[in-house]
Image (tube, rainbow, N blue to C red; front, side, top):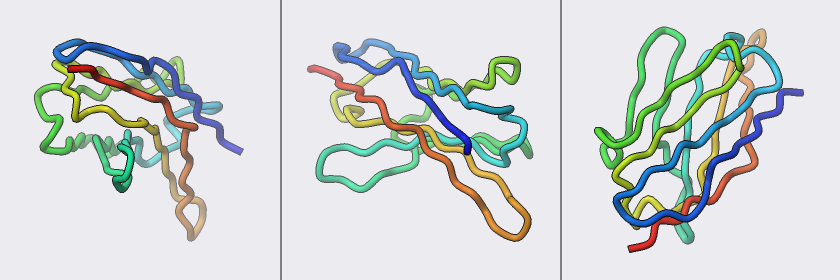
Length: 119
């Protein structure tokens, strides 16, 4: 069973930065997609950024120019660098990985890490 373990959340003032990490229990090269999602209280979970191993990275409009996805294949870890944080970025952030397994698609989620941005 694939495990994704997140770290790096916390409390930061508006305008500050945080970097989230998500360590996978196996090679991230085995995944077709990797992504970060977030969920604020009372809201649905929303996509922040998705990376495909076909080579595309797509960001939500709300984070473009402020957040950056990266990965380190040698550490089986993906990252989300978050700059110029705003109070509306406050949410629980979840990493996600997906891959094709035969005829079905498997989805794996981290446990979530809280990010709180104070004004």
